[in-house]
Image (tube, rainbow, N blue to C red; front, side):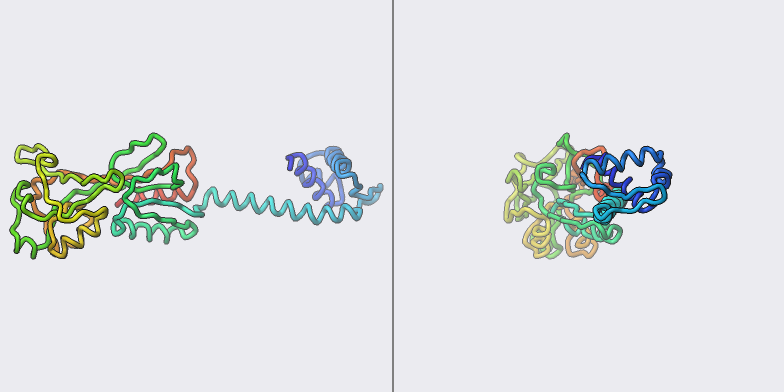
Length: 299
């Protein structure tokens, strides 16, 4: 509908309700002459007479009565749409697609708090360690580790964590405690495989001189390989080997004493989590709320 047509219907409704060009003009901030011309153009375009006019009164024709009912309905719908859009611009609502790494224990409490704070936002969560294409796969935001490499994305740092090498007390009591990285060659090691590349994660081990002691210098046994943290934690708890894990993944187990760290002086890696989203000058309110909430709370 053209803007001038919509304006014409609005003028018509004002005249029909006030039964006066002067009163309608006063309500709309224009002259009575302009109101009369607008009504005349509308009648000409529709090919019907909308008002019976005399020097003393103005009444609606049958066609005018029918048009008034429909015009009120259309204008009310437009007003409701404007109010809804205006509210959505300030009130976060709607579906928010987020991809997160397979470390649910780290993020679930934060996501639950977000749901409580923004009940009108519907979280659509996907947990995977695969490096998703945020833009092509239609995600609103993703949480990932490492540096930002995609120029199409914006980012906020959420938190940083150390890395630890762990095993169960029962395992170390039975098999001995490694004192230096080379000792790991005689221990079953629980490895992580990167979903995207299929390569095994290199453990961040240092030699005494501070130089890296990872691949290819140090070949570690591969007694088990998986693509998530939870499986390695579980196998380590069962005394089936030694695992290299983010500190947050075993925080509860370390506090409870069911796992213990080894080779602390030789481990050198910090994991940084970032929130990434498609660059935009004006993010949707639901996304802006999520960005601000996650950045303020942190991991």
